[in-house]
Image 1 (cartoon, rainbow, N blue to C red):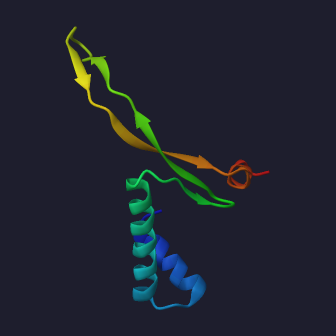
Image 2: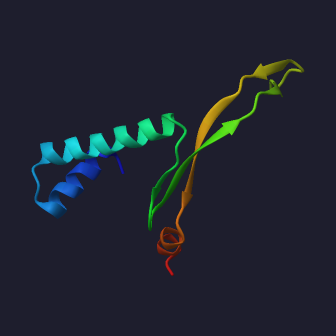
Length: 92
């Protein structure tokens, strides 16, 4: 599902104007982004959590060569689904 499809679906379910729903969705995504940028976890009860994770600097090999490259430390994001979401997806 794309963001535009999500906005359309919320508009149909709530009866709110599309431009207002778009503002709400964009604001929500901006807030989540800012929290993750500040290295804060974002949790939605019954849905799951977005957690920033630190990936340490390391040395990797380039496939097909024996050349080593140093990869800098960086942060990634991990999503952990809730038990409720897992059971819904698994069809229980």
